[in-house]
Amino acid sequence: MTYSLRSGYRAPGELDPEKAAIELERLRVAGGGQLMPPAIVEAARNEISPLNGAITWNLKAAAYQHQLHEARLLVRAIIRTDEATGEQTCAFVHVAFTPRGEEGQENGITSLSYYQSAEVIPGHPDEYQAAIQQAQGRLNSAERSLQEMLGLARKRKDIRVIGRAVRNVGEAVTAIQTLLPLQ
Image (cartoon, rainbow, N blue to C red):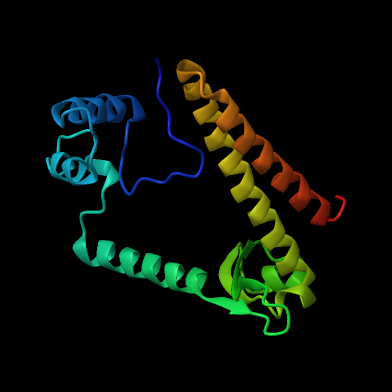
């Protein structure tokens, strides 16, 4: 068995996925078969631990990152309700993209990440397309997670339940793809 890090994961320090996986399994066994985040943090405090590089030890930086996380949670928690239809949607949409043309080049901008009003975004094609692509990415990630669970479910013979969930996510991915302009 070999171990690697999922695409997109960024550890604050050096991290060897092989050594980290072995240490996490050791902690799981030592924890009575359960791997708990407090045990991971405690083990990672040791500077020679293979988990040390996965944790931000600068408390100011860690606190700030936590505050940013809380701010993101707040923005995602706000919903708006159309009083006429009762339909609920998000009030803000996360947008991350690389500006095209002179605007990005002039200002030295390589990428942007921010939230846009759900009322405004349909009128901004670049932001709208970026938001749709991000939604598709999240659905693809959910589909991968369910596919992993399907592999585990084969061992338990629970394929019917997981298979239905995978199909539902697949249908959602297809629906998102229909919103994307042809490239």
